[in-house]
Length: 537
Image (tube, rainbow, N blue to C red; front, side, top):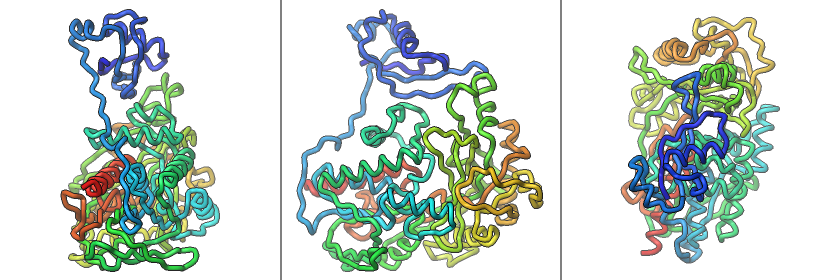
């Protein structure tokens, strides 16, 4: 196959137009093209109002060598094949079945790869299966009743299930893991466009069915998935054969599982588990992260800014990515931007409030929300906790989440954006139609943060308003607090991906090695590969 980069077409093109343009670039007859495989597709809006789709494609055609020699802009396609996609089955005794703690993207793909290789993993997930989890989450949003074990962050699929389902990643895919993850998602019900769209996304409504389908495959392959099951201790932790103590949170019964390899695929909000690991002597360190607010705008405003008025109504809802460095030396940037989405109450602990963003597959809410967050580090954490405590970043999060909870009287604190920037109360702010999942309360969000963080956000908004005309307007509003952007902890691991204790593999976003669905899933594969190789040996 031949590879073509940067093939541009008008946004209103069809499949025939793609074939014609391909034939023109190659210099062949359209009938000589046997197949076109799209590798990447993105919207190029740099020369508004003229907007293009930019393609990267692989082409199969008659007499490829002739055209390769004639046309220097062509190259041979170099497909990346994942080495572990079709490996021979292994077998293990019951006492050596690997244990996966957590069933978010990292845990799901670690368990799936282990199961595909015959290792029959056992998965324990503190939250509920996705069918029951949806009910718990909706009960919290509608009635304010929080399930601290199964919520927007905990449960089958992890925090990514109740998010935008964004699948873009900055991780380079030299081993084919990225492609394997995307292909697996498509096999289980995701739209095929995620294989090539530059900013692929699935949406909460589709993700719930997809993760259930993958769970069912793991079970068919001999794996076991236990929900409402929480890790509470690891006995004989320094021995090769460990006894993992688990608790069924619904029956309050404890059990022990004997195993040698444990994958800690924890989410970034597993605070009680981090505390347990510290007590068990597993090395970890505080990690810088970022926090701030969520801002919501009219989606039409963002579409016009990104595409121009003529094309805004034809193209899919637009996203944006903004960065700024404040006079305090703080990085400020947009994060987890959700076109056509919702702000959601994503709290996991009683008396603490945290928010996140999500959208459904169609992204049709009419609002565009994004986190606007500020970098924080150990210098900030030291003001709130023991300087030598690796969990001091969690304490920093908790203090601000407690303040947000009190500010909103248990509801999501909201404020008109212009009032947030001017430091005044929103007196005539109508909250009935806000695209927020969960109850809200008009609050002085501007008083939530330490001075450096608040002033950095204010400076950034002025810069963002120059980049996106109308970014500061009377209809935009903010909600707080966006505090769970990434893990405040990194669990140390060596080149074999093991912690300081043999047989324990820190993995994914909670362990500090990923930042989103795709990078977490790919890290899950990396860790599973190490266990597969050790079993082969």
